[in-house]
Length: 52
Length: 340
Image 1 (cartoon, rainbow over the protein chains, first blue to last red):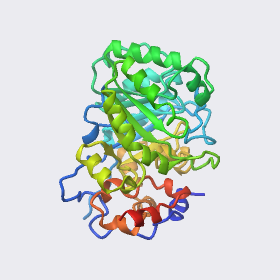
Image 2: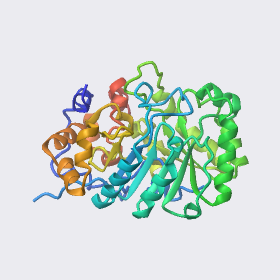
Image 3: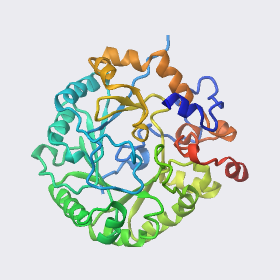
């Protein structure tokens, strides 16, 4: 199976983002922001002190 | 004219070889038992820097087993890119001077067991726990930036109290938690997403009681936490998740030279090794590939909402219904409907 088929088969595959929201740049109105790097060890708003 | 989509991070899997056999491993069944070619990866790291990639996460298998492990890290930081090393920490690596107190080199230790017996049960490695503890202690002493991660799954949840004691003993101030996403290739792993979400608040409270800071990379739909807890977690900046795949912000370079969308999809190559060789020859080739019709279509298929209620949710750009791979095995639709 290809990645395309795998994702296409998942629930919600038809619920596409409204126009203008495809890039994910319009974050929520309450000021909740994230730099999009939320992975293990990444700098992130909630992980801005990754060192113990 | 629309701007080109550029990735800002890459994962490089140095090898599929691992000295542990973790029960929850997402690569279970698709590990490639080879090491990435050093000369080839060196050239690709240069291209990554030209593309504008800021962060490279080194994974495996167990990346420290690669014979050129240090050289590869040095190559990454040479270009000013941050290098995050995700390791089980069993193999001792003498830390070069230039890694010490260097913000570009970050170790992430995965704690796979709370004591020797638990570690063995989870990984089949006899001395793994002791080796890992010795290395955490060594790296702390050497001034290497490190964080500690626990993969939450059914194997871990009954041992958390022992973990907290261990963390305090090691004088570690913060614990990061991820959630065991089942491998797309191994149907035998029993994932327990709802139980994990249910436990998240308690884990946070217990960490706080033990003077340990905590953060959660919640790859499940955030609303499963329930309205009040979700509000609390967000206000206190305790959770994060922002899959880079949705917006084309990241990709995986496999040990065989092929490209895949993410670490959990390493068996689903979007470009084989031979083609990847040409595409990663220079930044221009890669950017053309990354903005090609085929990849745009693929991104469109990934970048959807998993539930109708996600479309108007305040946290839609971060949560996005969680990691799509959960939805392959579970349908959270009824729970989302009942919560909201």
